[in-house]
Amino acid sequence: VQLQASGGGLVQAGGSLRLSCVASGRISSVVMGWFRQAPGKEREFVAATGRNGAGTFYSDSVKGRFTISRDNAKNTVYLQMNSLKPEDTAVYYCATGPVILSQLRSVTGYHYWGQGTLVTVSS
Image 1 (cartoon, helix red, strand yellow):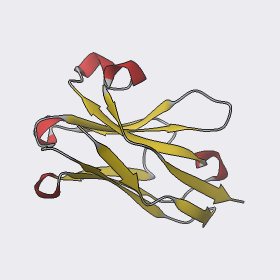
Image 2 (cartoon, rainbow, N blue to C red):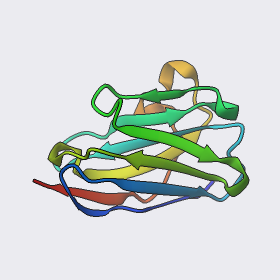
Image 3 (cartoon, rainbow, N blue to C red):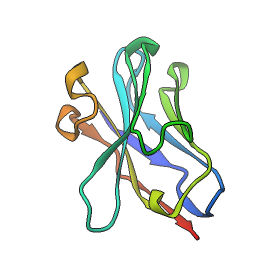
């Protein structure tokens, strides 16, 4: 499975961006997740969408500001990011794999990763 993330860029605090991740295969029956990694920090969970649309999951730091969605017909998952803050600055990665529920928020739960797209939020 290959994943191609795009949509990053430079935005002012309070602004919005939408990230996209296109998969080389069908995504309807797999978990799709977004993670991010800021300079000098570990990669962290941002959001995930369950198999066959079974639920969405968010980190506390983005809940209420970010929305994950998927278009199975286009094999694409999106991350709509609103009310961006400087602390959201990071490289954002999409990921997938045979993720089990208990590992959904863990980097080790995912087998396939996109190349990352940089989001920079200026104050």
